[in-house]
Length: 217
Image (tube, rainbow, N blue to C red; front, side, top):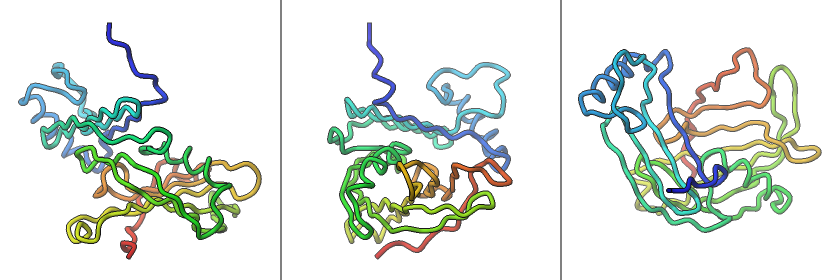
């Protein structure tokens, strides 16, 4: 019997259609049925709703096995990625990493970790975790003191001519024990819309799109 990997070692992300993507969702679901598989690799069932899975991403940080599925492109990638135990993270796992590093990094200081990125093909990359300094964050009508940390992909100069990977930003509560406050970054893939997720929801509890920032030089 095949044993499942521990939940804590597996990072998953998936994208479900929103109102803006429903038209594309219907097209993708129809095309996927023709290809003979659904979002999780199983054959679709008759009468499936339009809220079909469009994309999925998974990496096991114990074995280095990673899978990315794009239903809209009818493609799936299975790759072995380079994982350095204790120094490799993906997705929201960087919140845990930043919380553990915040006391070691003074404003302006940085350290390097590894990230598993989906482009959509799974890849490992070096990123710099930079303490951007202390800021006052407005959230749900109140001001909160916070420490900002930037996650900057270290991309070779020649590659920057062909690919743009935006930075991610994490804010932790600036007073008392480190606690998550805000996240800004692309949804999953580098070309995805940049979203913001707040601990304290404002008028809308959903993540809101944010304007793209100029690439770091």
